Structures are given as C-alpha cells and as structure tokens.
Length: 96
Image 1 (tube, rainbow, N blue to C red):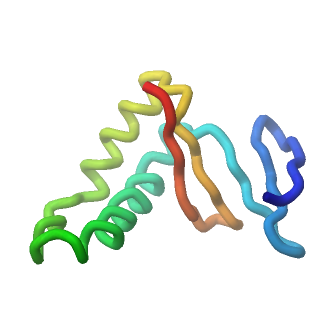
Image 2 (image 1 turned 180 degrees about the vertical axis):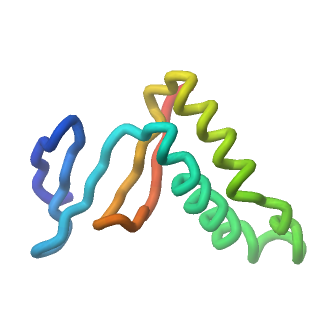
Image 3 (image 1 turned 120 degrees about the vertical axis):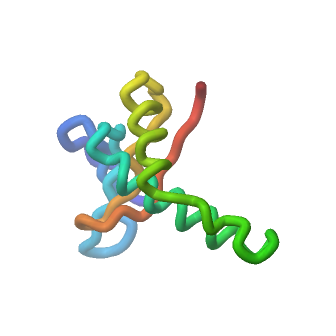
C-alpha cells in the first residue's frame, strides 16, 4: 500500500507516481456512484456463473436508494470508496 496523508477527514494514498487514491466516508450524495459500481461488480462477478439474464433486473437507481438508507442510517462502515480524480473505482462496507 502506498503512503498515507490525511486530507480533510479523508485518507489519500499514493498508489503510483503522480496519482492519488482517495478513501473517505461516504455521504448520501455518493449513493448513485456507489450503486453503479455495486451493480457493475455483481454483473461482472456473478454474470458468468448464473443463468443468462439472471442479473438483468439489477437497477442502479433502486440500489442507490438502498445505499442512501445504509449511509443515512449511520452505518459507520459505509465507505465512499476509492476514487481517482472524479472516477469512482470501488467502495467498501464493513460492520452492521
């Protein structure tokens, strides 16, 4: 893992020269981007393992509403995830 620098309540990790990777706690404004990554990850990971069309009903908009509830409900484990520039790279969640 790269070096860690504190920046306005977030952790900024340098992962390659001249590139920063920001990890911070999620806000409800992050819900749609988190949902987009969440749905894409499910489709990529489980798509080849399930019958064709099994994941077609996954909807980022519906998933975003669930993430709003998780984040607004005070889940301390909801993470804003990794971001390089303005591109969301991932998210994490731990705990209850």
